[in-house]
Length: 66
Image 1 (cartoon, rainbow, N blue to C red):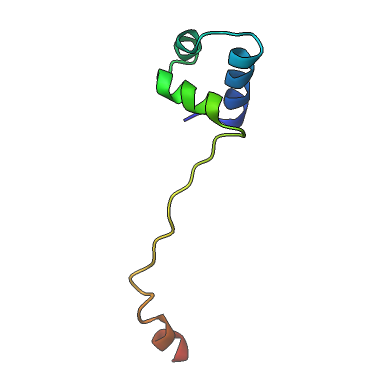
Image 2 (tube, one colour):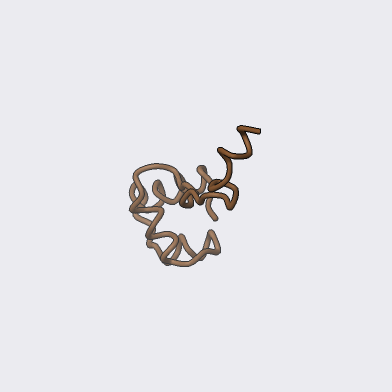
């Protein structure tokens, strides 16, 4: 996974210096698809996942009322 500095460096190398995606991928030792996503992104890379409910959610009101 790329950090914020890597994402900024990848965008700079590709946009400002015209470095090919294949060469950037080789330098950073990540896939070309990862580089393509970093170049297409407007901001820093983010990790997210959907919020899941807990198994206790169904009975939480009963627990809190005790």
